[in-house]
Image (cartoon, rainbow, N blue to C red; front, top):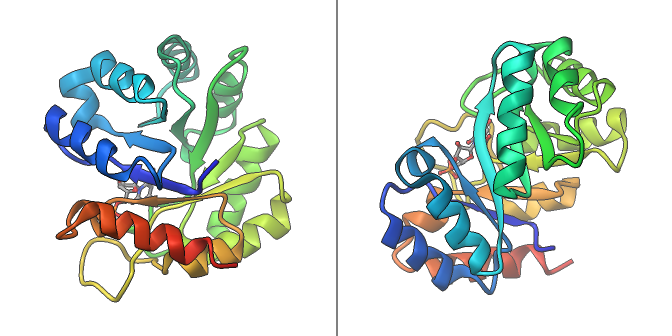
Length: 214
Ligand SMILES: O=C(O)c1cc(=O)[nH]c(=O)n1[C@@H]1O[C@H](COP(=O)(O)O)[C@@H](O)[C@H]1O
């Protein structure tokens, strides 16, 4: 499976459809977050799956264990490939999440890439997630190597905060696609570098080319 996850951070169904058409040669997994899901829910998940692609449902669950467990059961019914929880929900919540049988892949957010932190905090949360049976973490490109070293190769590291050049926006811990993949990222989550490009298809193609070099 291709390592690029395109974040469909748009509020328009037709725009999402167009982005998938334009980037489908370079992207296998599309991320649906609250802005799209709250408007189009099942309809958008079905559209992506009907295009032969996988859905990463990024609703970042963070609640009491029973509620998170039932939310994941609902996500499973949708047939999504992966979903997110917050690692700060704690051990009991993470274990409730992973207790769902035949569930989608669960990735735990360590520390948001818009926040500044120390690597030790990220590792602490990644290790807790792993102990609870979580499949991997969402982490900045700066901690990939350390997480792989501490949690093992099989533990997924999914990396947003991908930038092609220095930008002045909300992302604080960033890196290029090449560097993130070289460090060992299983997936890179890319939004604005593709969504806001003059030609999204060209941007996706260029990122794809840059990470397929090695
Ligand atoms: O869970 C995420 O996907 C996520 C976690 C995180 O720490 N940082 C982060 O940026 N993301 C998501 O990754 C995407 C990054 O988008 P861009 O900054 O536009 O490339 C957005 O959809 C964010 O919601």
